[in-house]
Length: 283
Image (cartoon, rainbow, N blue to C red; front, side):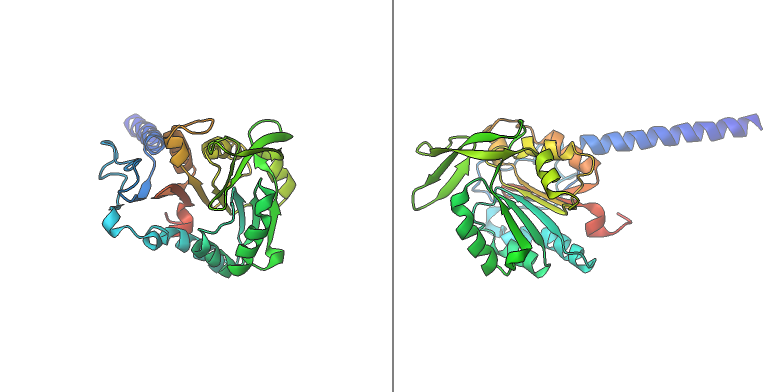
């Protein structure tokens, strides 16, 4: 009788230890399901280090067979999955610029009747941004442009740098472009922004913050109620040590993986998608 009880206790302890080891392993090694990186990017391959090969990186493409539509396949699947649930997804876009290079992505979102909140510090872009969204099929009542810069400092006003030389229109909290014009802009922390949105739950977060992506993402995920289905962010500036830091990707990827996201690298962007959104509750 005693031996059976001891055996049960040992099995229970062993099960707890195994579960703890599995959890620790998942935290150390995030699940990177896809890796798409054209060879002409000098920063590639970002994640093909010894510890990852064959274990986390399941699909590797090179420049000769790199296709943007293939890289976006799981993004599309996730958007369609939200739409099939009868939901009109709410998307928060930080640093959209004019979205001139994102036509396919935002046409798909228009088909899903997505509600968009776009945080863009450069007010000069409002007209082109609005025109492009209308062209992509978004009714005017389905999107709102919030003119502000994202920061992790107390909200107020910040110096922002704008450049528009007729060929490109860029803006950033850092004066990367040399000949930029400095202007004062309203700033928002992630907490402030979520308070402005009120009870609106964010399903999709897309950031393109010129080196501030990781810093701002950490602030969002410090908010307990923040749990979007899809997160898309740019990693390029961090890899180049531009912006304020942090520059290390792994802590961010570990955190996202431990919270139930699968990770998909698409050239300059990392896409994190909740596993149950792609694979159902059994994932």
